[in-house]
Length: 178
Image 1 (cartoon, rainbow, N blue to C red):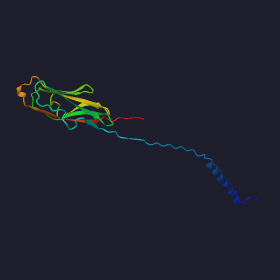
Image 2: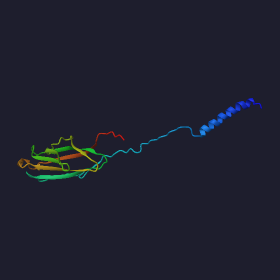
Image 3: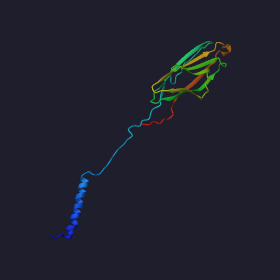
Image 4: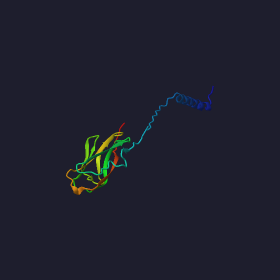
């Protein structure tokens, strides 16, 4: 039996093809796959309410020496972020003599005195820090105005007024590792 030249070439080639098919078919290839996704990124909100927004905290008429009036309002952080709150006296006028019409602003919730001095004495346009207020937290503020007992007849018919703005500002950004 003689082997032809074609058989000599085809037999080794067929053997290689069978071996290759066995290797591929056996699953001898290693592989690995992983995946990640950022599942959620949501921004927070910065909002607050003022129980007397746009309304006077109080109106005091016919004041006489020794009178004191208290007015309150509530600020609530209705956003989802804690915030630094501030109070700004935007405009004011006070025709009373120096030191005769006094104003005390107190954060009733924390017990902190925010301001004590002449009515209209907060620097117009300068923000007074009220500290941080957490989401859903409320702070009640009391404004106490007193006409000094020592006011004389020269103080009759005088007026004073002030306008205030409340603001909330986001806290500094933070880094979180998870």
